[in-house]
Length: 127
Image 1: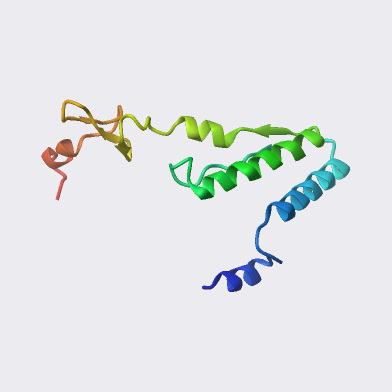
Image 2: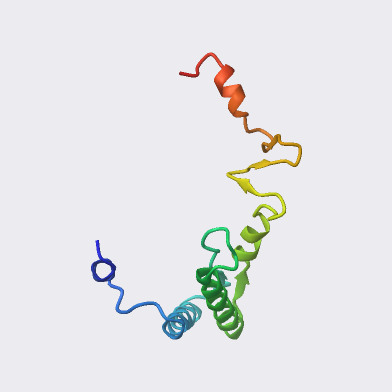
């Protein structure tokens, strides 16, 4: 499916741009505030992939900055999903893949509760 076909299917009128995004978020928050007395909170956008310095994540950062400004203007809380998830990424000093990283000793670091690959090979139900 092409991008344009997807946009038509989802009724997306144009490509995402920061200006259009801020207009839409502002409109949504304005409507929510006028139609409810509920406390309003928004989640910021999580990172895309693990490279926080990538072009797409720099774009996510700019969208999150705009989101925080709009939320503040509407007295809505902005919950820091991006920062919370980023804090869970492995330290770049100890590279890891899917939670299993190489240790300087040549061994591996396996998170607690995750059986080692050797455990699976030795279990009776392994095929």
